[in-house]
Image (cartoon, rainbow, N blue to C red; front, side, top):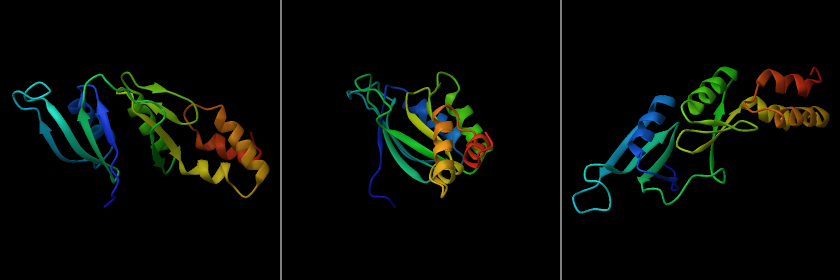
Length: 159
């Protein structure tokens, strides 16, 4: 078990966020929640904290209110086997009020930043052919969602 657990601050929509992540990431585990009591800082009965696990990574989260916002300064990388997996996570995380960004980055509807990265990215931008890696990097910088076939074509000089 990791000794470091990211803690996320939500604006009174933590329960919705946990349900959303459980619907997006297969095998999500919810380890427990706590709820505000009478006389506490939040609405009695509303979820206060949650502990959950996504793809083997444990998270803690709090319904802390509007005081702090997520930014791209912190993001979570989802390593994908193939284009189908990239497409799946890209589509799920950008649904609703999610937003696409450059080079495989998305923000979900809660403002959390994710990097949806195919394993092919590492093979192409750090490959043994320096010119191929340069071409693949240039191709990546023009993409929002990363496209495996386009990265490979650029690396091999077919693009």
